[in-house]
Length: 234
Figure 1 (tube, one colour):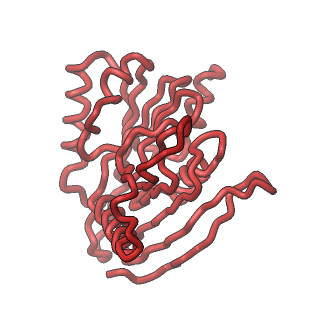
Figure 2 (tube, rainbow, N blue to C red):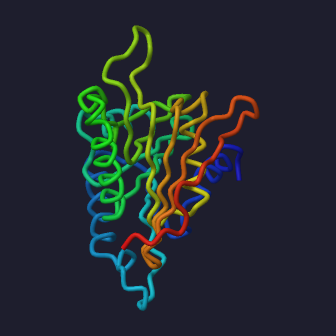
């Protein structure tokens, strides 16, 4: 294995072994890939809430090896592709795509609604910008879309427009991947967020874990605060 191949495997190491991999060959082939993945992850037993039935290890992810110019042409669009979240490593020409499960949008949407309700009496509801599914630069030409996020509508001159708080929801993701995403978001050299919120959903046990992450400059490592652990939510 070459050094470049090794770096790719490190980037992909948190994904399930069943994750499909493709090499980009053009727009028509990309459309076929998207159809294959949408069909594969249609009504999936992975999302069933009946804990008496076995679930299958079906990856919600797929990977496309694509060069930066092709990535820019296909994915840096005004409107994101519905139902997808992406993480692109430009140096490795490697794109991770995740098909959003029903739980992702539901949990992120409910948190967003709660934040807006809290902001309403303070008169701040109209002063925040929403970043769910938006392409955010995360260092070295890399791009990631959070499940949710907020930032001020007004920005000081010269300050990049990006979320101050991001949300990542894990429905089937490994805890390691969710934690690595949060670390990346609050790293001042990468995601640059003031805070990351992770919501880990265990559909089989009807449980939710809610953590907040903030960068500790003293130890150069995130500080994690657990708000809810193993809370029954339905």
